[in-house]
Image (cartoon, rainbow, N blue to C red; front, top):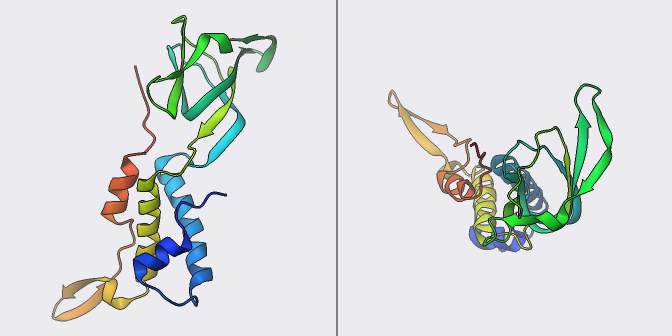
Length: 194
């Protein structure tokens, strides 16, 4: 599994010079990666030669999520009355290109011929290279910041303080910090509707 930040990144950010908390911080790094994946709606890992199924919507773009290379696109017939796949498959790889074509990784496939992707349920099988070749620097920064936030939550001086009728009570921020959310929103999965 790809780590979105390293133990050294977090230790530098927190100015920690001992190794006493390394195991705990390493577990927080894995949790932060999962939290980031859930928030943005996909993973930043590299998936070469992955097979994924997509449903056509009768539109000219098949949204696939981040894809770097198309190896094969098969159009599969699906019979909704029977709930089965038809025997006929059609290789349409020659008619497919990454979309938008000036962005790598792209996030969809377009037909060169301009034909739409037929409506259906899981009727396109795509073999390709999905994901990112490297974790983007902004995601590394967001992961490091999120882990440091969690580590600092153990320190009472880091918590938000709220004055309440002359007494002071500690209030810990349970949400992701706003700067992390701002970085993640740059990559958050967005739906496209015609």
